[in-house]
Image 1 (tube, rainbow, N blue to C red):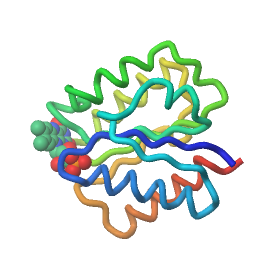
Image 2: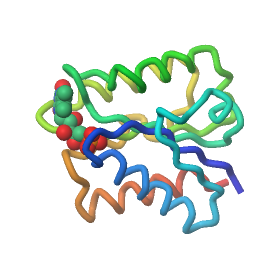
Image 3: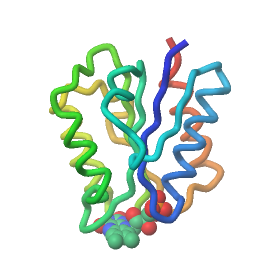
Amino acid sequence: MKKLTIIYWSGTGNTEMMADAIAEGARTIGGDVEVVRVEDANKDMVINSDALAFGCPSMGVEVLEEQFMEPFIESLRGIDFSGKKVALFGSYDWGDGEWMRNWVERMKEYGANLINEEGLIIRLTPDEEGINACKALGEQLVKE
Ligand SMILES: Cc1cc2nc3c(=O)[nH]c(=O)nc-3n(C[C@H](O)[C@H](O)[C@H](O)COP(=O)(O)O)c2cc1C
């Protein structure tokens, strides 16, 4: 079974709820899952995983959170993503998802195989439908 690592930043808990639901979905089908706050994450966790989910809300003006998430994502440039499934997710509020579109393009430049080309974005706190979408994404990440 695939090793999935979920690395995220969350200020008020919405993206964290998404991370936990992705983990729950993956564990339902037997995935080996680790959920890590980006503050505690390192590059080796990425290198040693078969599947990765990166989560961050839209912050600043349509950018990643700048203290922890932005430098962490920058540090992934150059990693060999071949054979790894990657998904992006995050919460937002008033925008139109621009931060996620930019993030998707950036991860493609890094060579990441994104399984959700648009990123999973949810406005503010995920409702039941949102939680179910997160669980489904978790399953997809660890399926053979
Ligand atoms: C400093 C700050 C900047 C934000 N900038 C944006 C933004 O540019 N676009 C947007 O759609 N939402 C923006 N938001 C709203 C957050 O993305 C939203 O509240 C989200 O649910 C927070 O997720 P979290 O609970 O995981 O921290 C901003 C929120 C804060 C606190």
